Image (cartoon, one colour):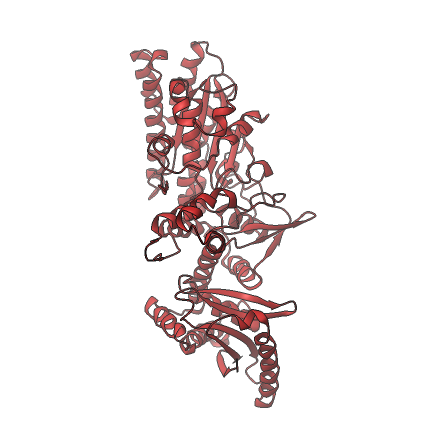
Length: 579
């Protein structure tokens, strides 16, 4: 099976034998909406660009003769809509803009607008004389170019004949924001390029622009344009579009059957744990997979040797790492508090996903916990797990995102504790773990805790942000375990109806040979007596014995159970419990 990993050209996918998951029924759904200017936001690597390219091939009046060739076998081929191949298609993609400086960003934005309008006037040259085309392209700013283009189309008396598709509308703006709020505010001020561009687009919608479809990651840029562009409807959390981007369980079945004809369900569980779990509407039941992650696995898996080098696609990881820099616009204490809660409790609640983020020179959104959690949702770091009344519960969607959270948490803790733990140290830690030795994991945990506890030293004038307890010890230890190609760390792992082990380290590298771990964590204050520690140890051993007696524990191969009792920033007792 030829998988379209990284492919964004619909024509190429359909004519070169790639496996295509049919999303064309969403063309019909979108066209039937009363809203004609629609925004759909999704995190990185969910197939947004391919979907936008598909819209171009379907609606472009120049491509009418290729409809049967490209759409044969799809839903829309059998159920064409009234607007098929009836528009002049004007498309923009703002993902490749240089954002090293604000000047670079403005220049890149202007260049993309000029390039696309130049292409548009060339493709539909029957509507533009050479002189008219030259006049349009000679305009000094993006909004002037767009206004001149719309005026000329209006003179042709073609009615509302233009369909505008804007892909990754906020990519460059998010990059700027990650460098500081002031640069972003400069970008959207009234005398910049971006706001006047969308004002021109809004005016065009009154005369020649019939439909607009916009994709991106977050709503901050559109919200910050304020009245400059208030005609679009954000349908990102609408249940009707929950599965429009990404893959469902049913849609990945042919891929699994091709790669693993005798192990479909077993492999589905593996892919589900790493790549599934995204729910974009509070009312949706269906979860979806990150499409690029699934396709990455399909092209990198070696069926002959039954091996994949890494479950983590470096391109996806890189994109997610870049966009999380946006969180730096908030307070560090809030950022750490929210991340700690997510890692510790695996769930966080808000009173609805925040829809409005206005960040301009005139006003600025309140960066509270609800705003931060909502941004994490739009970025793909969190997904909707449940809804009770007005309260929405969110969690990490899958193992890949858990890994990124733990990596992120480790970085925050190292900065706050002024501790440096190198990649060589973590590699050695993992090598020791797979053969059954947790000593270095404990040592690195102690190193991190010592750095964090030193912040409570009155002589330095620094105060610790959070008191130590068992849950915080667990957060610190988990933050060191972000390499999910070796171990998947499970927090509060359920072994029975009323039994939860603090940490279960599930070996995924040679799982039948590597050692798996149960860790029961206890915490005692610095002045706790040895007699009191004896009592804590007794209770911990009793709890571990209960876990080990369960059927869940008994089927785990090479399981090594440990009771770890921390006193302040040191592991006072390391007890290997009997299996």
